[in-house]
Length: 295
Image (tube, rainbow, N blue to C red):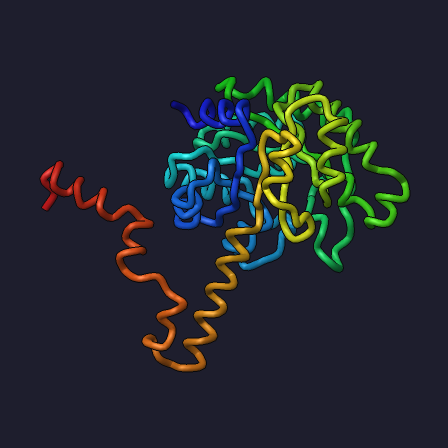
């Protein structure tokens, strides 16, 4: 079954958990842990690839390269952040064709002005949004460009990231989130992607949005997967799990090695050879050597 069809069917029968990876290795660990899907997000991949914050430094070519490698590494569907499509509706059409060719099962498009950046980085100016009408045009272009009808296009609005949280709640901007996302669904998006910060908001959006819905949990949205399952969300993204877990593991191991100068003193921070070979699928390649009589 195609990854696109697999994801669409899984989303029609329950809440899919799409967990953040930063490369093919971590994606295989997501799969081996038993999750339904892998997520590729800009926050994590700009950090893993460049060691930089999420400030739109990654080109489309960079993201496509990563999406292709991760899609090849796993058998579960991959969902990928396609930013704002790297331009206008025409650029979005090209991006959809490009990402579809990598093997990912779905992308999400955002409604920020270019160049965008993560809306929750301290000390960084807030994003500005394009109009609802312009974003609808981008979604219509994305739908027209896709070749596989099962390839999904999720639409996310960044209303919450365009102003301080106090103003967001004071001006009741959750209503604008609903209005924008319902318009994006009408334009042809397969699901609406919301940023809900607590359980009440998760439920509010489920009641107000007229179609499939995608949620997210991370440091600013510290929610359990079960919250989204109970609210009947179609997909929930754990965007920062991979990058934050990797960062802690590497930091601890490097620090301990610097302190002790002894490989033998950091074994509690490391996996062993057998575990490593299992993750990368070495046994399968050994069988290929025998099957195809490779010397």
